[in-house]
Length: 115
Length: 112
Image (cartoon, rainbow over all chains, first blue to last red):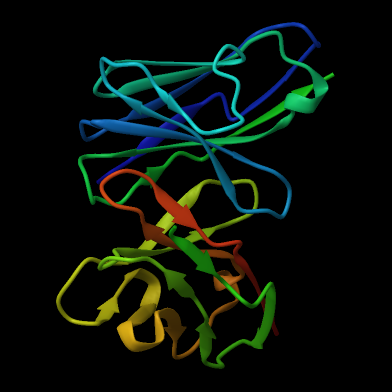
């Protein structure tokens, strides 16, 4: 149980394009989903917290117009990197949980490479 | 503010040997704590969690962790490691009802 699917697993695109990453909870309803960014050999950096039906809460220093988050249902959240540039290249990971104080369950991540 | 410290960046142990990964936390209230494991290029898998009750927590893959309030620690242990345990291990503390804070991680290598 508690499976989170993240798609795509790997994407390469040209600078200036927008990229959408999907995060789905397959066997549970996720009241909250989280989006992280991870640089090589580093820990996870929380970008934003997404609650179904409401606006995402962004961490300090994360551009909300750059990283658009939509949590339209209890099983789906999307992260769109708008007008991506090489410095946006990274490993993006989502997680989901069923409620407060519950563990987060993680997707397998998306490797984003901007040329 | 809450924080998590994993003092060991990289640990190498021989296959079959015992393992202990250290984790210290700073949090004003009663914490809830997690250990996650990450294989290269993948997401994180939950090994175990502590919310309350018994301070010795059993997890998957033969791991266990002990919560010691007096030492603000939540160390991860395994009596005998396998080559497949080589990975990055993250300790995390729950910051209230919302987000969790991750430590910087400990990379575990297994010596044949």
